[in-house]
Length: 361
Image 1 (cartoon, rainbow, N blue to C red):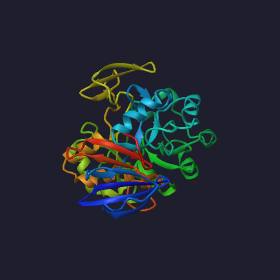
Image 2 (tube, helix red, strand yellow):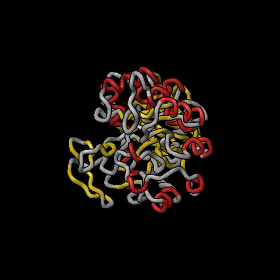
Image 3 (tube, one colour):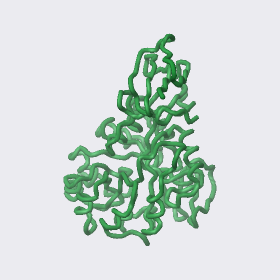
């Protein structure tokens, strides 16, 4: 079946997008006469079409968490309504049994955003930079354990812990450095051994210091990707703009790092026996530790734009760039790429979403 999205405004051009089997086949100038037989037509009336957003770091929303696997439809519905057409459900540091249960099931079948696989944030991280991660389950890298998990596309690792370098070199998925106290030289070696990204840059890692540039300096020198939570809370606007100017649209990846409280109002929540407090739309542990984000990736794009980052650059860093980070053909209006799109209005509200050419909302 051929699908045609007609009368789509892409930048300043009206276009018709031809889709076959969920993949862009060709992009043509808009024509009222172009209505092929036996095709499914979606005329979006000249509204703006953008590549769908790809969140490679999101732990959940709407009171549900990706690690326990409950609320899959509720999470999928909320995310796709919010403009997330692809995501890597991101697990927290947990027991082997809990991670096995999370990732060895078929992810979110037949509805909502496309899920190429999971992102394991831990458990092979530093006890000294645990942040909101559960220290009881932090452990040393174990290739045998890791290879028992299916559907994993990315893992966050602290490169300074015993066995990390060998793991990075052999694990076979995208590796992000995070929850780490590593120095510059250690991070450089990790990038040389195969890591390609920093997890939530500046948060839960050694700082960028003028005599010890740490993992951020190493990422600059090694051309790595950097995940950035641009919600206006985790990083000062000046720091977000600094990362944008340093890494550019090719290497800066906007993420949400959303947790189960995303989409919920301010309040105190007990989810999976853990207390999270949402105040001013930000999530905290009871001791005041920041506990991820309560924002969607679309919220983070809007906030980045409000900081002065150009609109189309912000959208690229939340679509094409994260896809490039893990080696997928998403986020571009080009033949051969996944037909994942969002329709937006002039105020950057999401009107509808397409996943692999299927209208979801």
